[in-house]
Length: 323
Image (tube, rainbow, N blue to C red):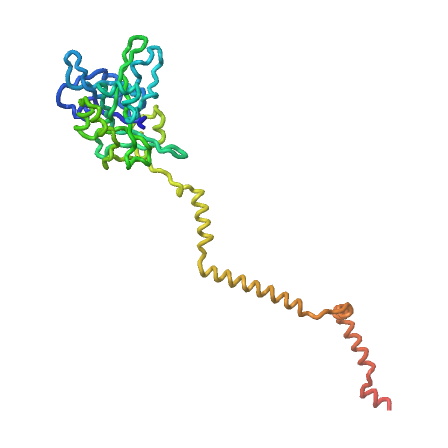
């Protein structure tokens, strides 16, 4: 799938990128072209097509067309929907009526600096896909013309897609058909045999196709400018402060110093010994009666009684005095 792109090329850069700098190049409606970092269906983009030979015309034509195919058989009173056919699957272009009649003579090339693709997830993340050396990407496309109720003729195109390459499969299951060299562009524009197109409509497997994450803000069509292609750093789950707190806390709890473990064990043992000693002491105390409790509680009385009994004993002085 390809629904967003960057096209800030100059008009002469487009024809040169398509290997059409030699020979006549006629321009049509190029005043409608507005370079943008965030192009979406419905926008006017420069397209290179083969001259149709009318009035002896030869070479190629650089024409500004709207992205999003409107078939010529669409009712004149119908409001054009450019999001309906902005892509065409390569596997079915020779089967569906909207495309198969265009394959023989209405092939074209779309040149852009890169395209955007979104990675599905809890939050969709856009990536910018481009060539490492900065050269334009050349997409295989089909075009058509449609006339509305006011007699205005509108040229539109659709970008052909294929299954994703082995390198880009993680991002999306579809990608635009990229014509990687002059031979492939010559074949696509000039060859009359559709059997030769099968080898062109394949995933681009070159290692020079690279990508990086960009701001989700460019998901809005109104967001435009160099900020669209600025690389950003993605936040990982480990950077979450709450996650960090609990993971750190759990680690501290688990990773105790062996020495601390010994001290804790010793402390627990001492506490247990103290409790055992208290219980033993309690069990070893003799059982006392109520009278014992009273006598032990009144030591003064004992002294008094002891003194009285001594007074009753005969002393040596009293013995001699009596005799």
